[in-house]
Image (cartoon, rainbow, N blue to C red; front, side, top):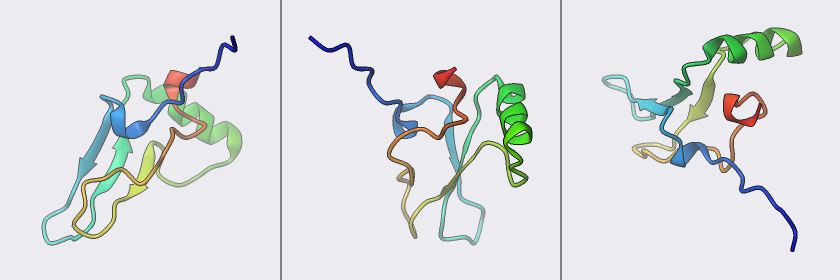
Length: 78
């Protein structure tokens, strides 16, 4: 038997949060994991400058997370 890890899915994670600003048609998804320092450090190390913890925008009038699996900077992967 192979010992295969199950992929981490943001849509099933308790730390995935979505906010739809008033008057907007798309939901902004982000990671609200308590270890935000790890996320910020990852972004700094990789030279990423935009919105640490941002997962993406949902489709118009949809509350579905736009990612199939978690990003490389997910604290649950460390």
